[in-house]
Structure formats: structure tokens, C-alpha cells
Length: 378
Ligand SMILES: *[C@@H]1O[C@H](CO)[C@@H](O)[C@H](O)[C@H]1NC(C)=O
Image (cartoon, rainbow, N blue to C red; front, top):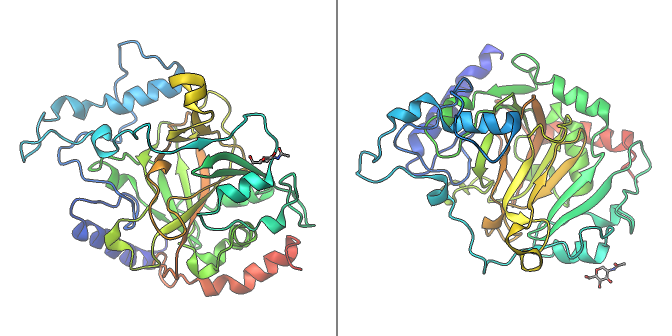
């Protein structure tokens, strides 16, 4: 990382550490609802011992998960914290949702794209530019690469978009995280934060200059009804073998809403494939692929497997800014390196701070050019 970025970064890091009491930013001062576990406990160690007891899950992913939980530090973890309270667990910080909380999976698993259903699903959320899709959910732009929009869950709405990035674009974005990143992508050492928080994040994040990622921005704007000024610093995230980002919300704590308000949408692009059994999926703990009333308690949890170029879109909050607790999710441990590009859309104008002098308007010209290259311009 260029030396001149170090100071502002350290300031951001230091100020995050000072201002948080009770809620804590892992990778970012805006990180959602995550509380400090006052006792050390969650080591980011990937060299942890393997659990000897039999686990239900098999294979490397399960072994890695077991390893994370059974790190050596755990044996020294006090039973009570310094206030005499039991240290928080994931269950106490993120209590399971009651069955009375409405959740509506797709009415039929094998149903084709249904625009009426999509319109209904996004009624209370940031709008999708549905006029850019036909009745089958295929994008109508004329340039290379047709997207397929899929509705994965009705309420809360979750979408995937196949072929959102071409393989060349995936390659280009993956390369931005080589080494310490380029001048357009500045690495933020998130593992530093994870040891003291209930959400374990052992992945590494790069904050991007807007002008460094015009393709992502142009495509986000083609898909969503959004102005560049609402977009938070786009990020590239790398999860290496055994790394994860455990259960978390993407919403922003109330105290930090001054900058742009709540995050209304999360748009994430998988840059490489993770085959079946390799982990790395994005999992929504409280959402299912079928109605539990129909199939009983065993309804399969909604889980999205990374495929190069596929985008995942969901909404941490309603369009009026109310957070949606149903979108608790995690990045599952992967047995190979997984890379994603992601961005969050805010309610209002968001002012970026990393890397220094990172401004949305500096990307405007480049985004216009991308619109032409991609066949988006009318
Ligand atoms: C689309 O969904 C709506 C609402 O559930 C339903 O009434 C309609 O029949 C569906 N259309 C098709 C073509 O399946």
C-alpha cells in the first residue's frame, strides 16, 4: 500500500476503536450491530486443533469450522466476563427469529421468472430497474453478456443475477487484490479487528477508488435505481482457505447514520467459482428455500454458492430505512480462496473517506464511458 494512505487509514482505524462502546466495527467503522465479546475467545487462527468428536458435517469445510471454534485460546476463555456475565454467544447476540416473523419463500421451487412476483417482492425496497429486463428476467441491453435476473426469496426479497460480470471482468477485479492492491484498491487489515468481536471476520478487505471500478458502478446503476452519490466505497474481499465472516447484518448502527443514512441494498459479485462441497456460500440463517409450513422443520436454508460473475442482491433495510432483521447472513468458510466485489447503497448522499480523496464524482466520466461500452446508453 502506498505510504501516503497509511496515515488516514490509521486515523480511521483508531477513531473506530475509540468511538465504539458496545458496538464495534470489524473491518470498517460502519460495521453493523456487532458487540464486543469482552473475553478473548475467537482466535482467527487457522492452525487450530481439529475437534476429535464426530461432527455432523463432513469434509474440509466442517473441519475448518470445527477448528475455528476449537482454537487454543478457547481453553483459557473465562466462563464469565469481567462484569460477572457470561460472554455473549452468537445465539444471545443474534437470537433465532420466532416463527411468527413473516418470511415468504418462493411459492414454487421450479417456477420460472415471474415479473409480477418480482414487482410485489421489491415494493418496500430500493427499486430495481425492471424496465431493463424482459418477461423472462433477461436483460435487454445490447452489449456483450446478457444477465439473468432470478428471484430467490420473496419476502424479504433476495435476488441473484447470473453473468453480471464477464469472466474477463472477474479476472480484472481479482487482480486488483494481488499483493497489497493497486492505488485504486487499498487493503484494510480486517483480521486485526476480529479477535475481539462476536462476529468473526478473518477475510481481508480492499477499499476501492470509485474511478478504479467504473464497470461495477455502471452495472450497479443499470440494475438499481440509484445515484452514484449513494454508493459506499466499493470493496473487494478475499477469503482464503479457512477464512470466514460469521453471522452479521449489513445495517449500520443508529449512531453512525449521519453519513448517507441506512444501507438499503447489498450488491455482491462473486469473482470465482466455488464448487459444491467447497464451502464459501453466502448463507441466510433465517430464510429457507421452501415454506417450513409445507415441508416441516427441515426446510433447506437459503444459501447461495459462488459462481464467477454471479451477483447477489439483498436489502439490509426497507426503503424507509428500517433495518430488516431477517437478512442475517454469513460468508461460509471456504476450502479455497474466494473473492468477491461488493457495494452498499445508502438512502442519501454518502461521503467516502477511504482511500483519501475518494469521490464518486471522479468516476462519473468513466461510468458514462462504461455505459456506452456495455450497451447501456440509449
Ligand atoms: C406470477 O405470480 C402471480 C402472483 O403469485 C400469479 O398470480 C401468476 O399466475 C404468476 N404468473 C405466471 C406466468 O406464473
